[in-house]
Length: 399
Image (cartoon, rainbow, N blue to C red; front, side, top):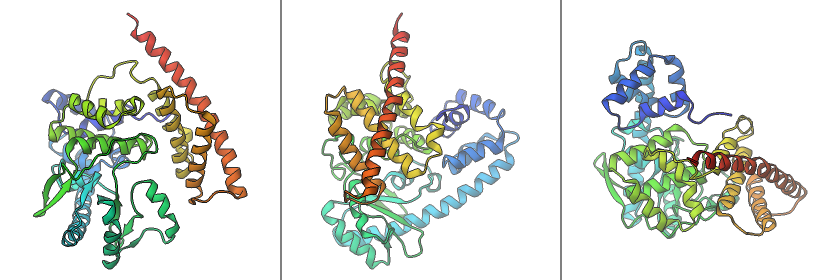
């Protein structure tokens, strides 16, 4: 099993978190002295935290880390230059969109880079995500084409796939420096049904390079990032994503009781809210109370297992989706017809795997049979783990 929070990762997470008391800083310095500097630098690179590690490590002046700090500085400078280039391209597109009457929201990494992180270069990002109203998507797409941007994939038949993910096909700039995902809604109904939230209504204006960018309201942004981590990343996220949550909470002074009240309004299904509880605990640094979510450790065990890490990425993602479906159904205690649910899930996953909305064909029929067998095996693995965790938590609750 690949532990998500082994000692090195936990130390890196705490070191890169935004708020630390003097006692915590002293303790971190003592722990850092026990580590191999090269190892922690490699881990930071893997977790997309090298620029942020430089920012937090430099003022500590830990003996033995001088060369590591210099190498991390190089990552920080390169990421700063790249982020500035990406954001300046978005700045030009935003001004053009505004002239056409198209409001635009920055999402995820880009929104965090210009708001909660103290410097633009501290938050690495693979692409930039924006949100526009659905009725503006075609006009924006035409605008991107006029700016010599082109679809990331030449096969336009894959548009249906990105529609499922709530955004149009990603576009790439002419020099291939900017990959842009244009979302038409924040949430989809694949696993968790979310109330109709209009993020434009209470959007926050953030100024970067003398330009005002709109970003989602703090609690909406926190919920969206958690939702994205669970639904799209299947909880196989990087430590950078946990730092995003903690940075949002710290920068805006968010309170867990307010967020939980809002979550009750946004997500009517108890199982959907429970799925996010461990992320909420980590974001607000709350104690982990035993018995609140027995399935979660079993699910994390599977998605972070060594076996999963050696599977092809696309197959790993689809299998993780299957375990997440099982997790939601079990936590809900649902009485849904298991055969219908299995067939619906299978058709969806197999269609995604073959990148085609069509059905039929010997390959797809074989794929459906194999997929049903895989889901059955996953169920046989996940459910016993769930039962064991539940029994163990009941025992720990006894006085």
